[in-house]
Amino acid sequence: MTIPPALRVLAAAGFAPSVIALYNLSFSKQEIFEQVLLNVGISFLGFLLTRKLIPILKPICLKRGLFGRDINKKGTEAGEKQIPESLGLAPGVVFLICLIVSQQLQSYDIWGIAAWLMQGARQEESSGWVPISESWLVDYNAALATICFMLFLGFADDVLDIPWRVKLMLPALASLPLVSAYGGGTGVALPLPLQSLGLPGYLELGALYKVYMVMLVVFCTNAINILAGVNGLEAGQTFVIACAVMFHNLWELAGHAGTQPNLRDGHLFSLFLMLPLAYVTLALLLFNWYPSQVFVGDTYTYFAGMAIAVAGILGHFSETLLLFLIPQVLNFAYSLPQLFKIVHCPRHRLPRYDVKTNLLHATPNWNLVNLMLHVFGPCTEQALCIRLLVFQVICCVAGLAARWSLTGIYKA
Ligand code: UD1
Ligand code: MG
Image (cartoon, rainbow, N blue to C red; front, top):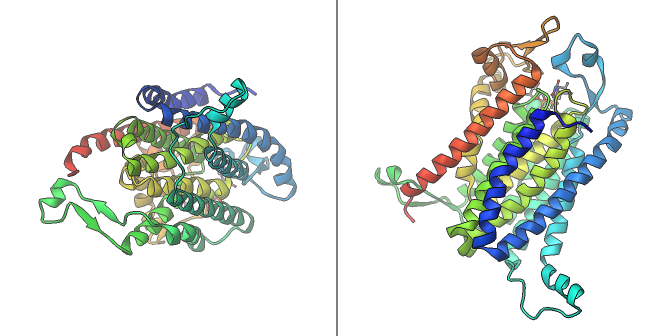
């Protein structure tokens, strides 16, 4: 399989910061490093499995009538082709398998067993891995149930084509296992400028925090789903966000957070979600990159958005997560007049394809895809996807920079 050069660059740019952070972690926190390495291995196997599974699922989806037409190629032969839809099912299922295997393996002293196999005797000392606590297990099961529920509802949407207003709220349903099992903190830290207005350093939200959780879940899932419609965009933005979160987690683990059990567990938990997400998404991109052989479907956008939201909530860095989601926040806010039907909203808010020039032109639809074309002029579909992903990378870097500079304005 030939991998498009742009996809190679995207993969390298996504993984490079995490490799540096992992190297850093290998010196500062050896036991955490080993645990992370195990998850890298599992996620890589997830990548291979997803890559194998997609070609198997393609003809099956076509046979069952699960396909779509490539709207941005309308008027050409490629635009007439039936493209298998809902292929997000493959990365979704493999992601869940990775999560379960990772959890199982962490319950065992893997390095001790390996030493025993190699030396014929079990090492006395334990691996020093972060032990799986009871609250970790509760969080883990809730996360698994919620992501699984979302994957199911996303697939149901692809099959049944659920009306827009109903499907907007599907993530709220899927978040129920997470919200009801959540037993962590229910307050938010306020930055010093707000404290100077008389507000406390730590604002206890109580039950309202659960409302905030549901809102975050509904936002993340729909935000990924509506920044879409260009080959490679849904999976591409998810890959960039997952890599940014992964880097954030690794960097924090190598520093102060790695020594504080509460912070450490949150970042580890998030990392164990984002690692397989990045890998299975990369495998999906091999098929979804321009020109797409498969469409990801709402199965994927909803599942990926939910995995990211769960990482932010259970990793206790949802405010930082929103900094990585600036393109999605902008797109969501800009889309509101159409989402609420104040302005006419067609079924697809995509650009207009010019068959003669092979370029996409902006339409009056209120989203970032069209705004990009307005600002930077018409371009090919692949160039449009690359522009949007570059913007995503810039926002993630800026988000990280803002997070680091903002740390000083929170009272410890
Ligand atoms: C969301 C967007 C819609 C956008 C669609 C594209 C809102 C409110 N909804 O709707 O504007 O058109 O996603 O996914 O913003 N498709 C392509 N090329 C691609 C990906 C998808 O042409 O690279 C088309 C295919 O016909 C595919 C269909 O989009 O079958 C999938 O649309 P779907 O995910 O069901 O749309 P929504 O999520 O409802
Ligand atoms: Mg969609």
